[in-house]
Length: 82
Image (tube, rainbow, N blue to C red; front, side):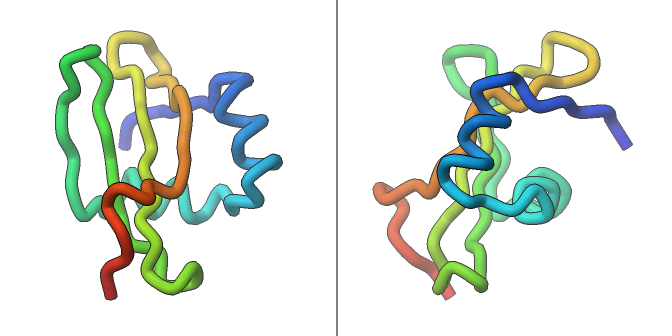
């Protein structure tokens, strides 16, 4: 298991958006999709059943150790999935 840490921005987003950390870890550990972005970050997505299938999007910078969770949000572009 790789080590991850929250950036100060990501930590603020967990609080502000009321996203439990467990959902972040679930998204990273068992993503629906995992894609490298043009920005060099890795983008993880996962439908969160507790949020009626809304898709949580977690962006991670893999080029630092521990890997840094840059930001996270519910991605309205991806809609809901069951």
